[in-house]
Amino acid sequence: MTAPIKQPLNIVLIGPPGAGKSTIAEALVRERQLVSISTGQRLRAEIKAHSLIGRAVAPYLDKGELAPDSLMDRLLRASLETLDPEQGFLLDGYPRTLHQARGFDGTLADYGRMLHAVLALEVADDEAIRRLSGRRICEGAGEPFPVHIDDLASMLRCQERGGRLVERDDDQPNVVRQRVIVYHEQTRPLLDFYESAGLLRHINAHGAPAEVARRALAALPAVQA
Ligand code: ADP
Image 1: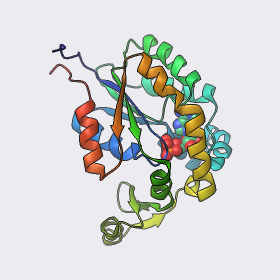
Image 2: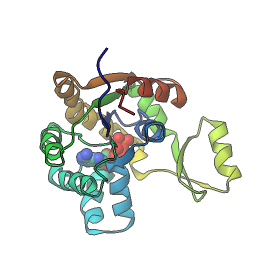
Image 3: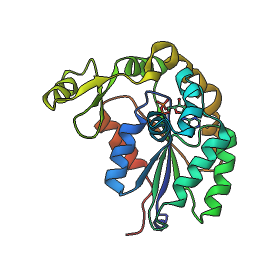
Image 4: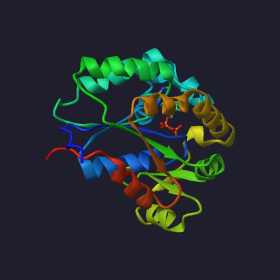
């Protein structure tokens, strides 16, 4: 048996759009007391705030393209900068290109951290597209949460809380297709990169969110108490 690794636990989550990254990230963060760093959420908040960064990245997100590596690298550094060194992280959405992955190695070294595992959520393209085209965000009822138009229970939960359903701009069908293409072209090569580094763990992302979260949790390395 391998000895448990020392805290803090640092994890990267990779998966195509529609794999359920943010849902699974939420479960992992809760169960393992990690800080969540979601680059997609961060960019959407910048866009909402009409900040300089927001205005710079909006055209990329609108088209389903990736934001520039240099900007993402700086954004990631800024997130790690403010993180308590004792605190582990769950990174959802970065790295997303080979360039980012190589730069990330240097960034981790600069902050005296190591990466313990990369979880790759795997889902078929047609299922990912089905999930995204029916996805809505329930807003105005506390913390926003995703619902699916085929999932009556989640729709009712939103209604009962007085929330309203909002569609993410990049969940429009033509943008979704582009996001999936970009994933295959630019992000999938990271799986080989992390496989070679001995860090990759494949997670079957088909099935109910609780079931996928259970698989992801089981794939996390043990840490010292
Ligand atoms: P999804 O994985 O479902 O497409 P995310 O919320 O992770 O959704 O990301 C939304 C968008 O934000 C991406 O399509 C991309 O434009 C941008 N983005 C997020 N993270 C990165 C990154 N590391 N590099 C470049 N662009 C990014």
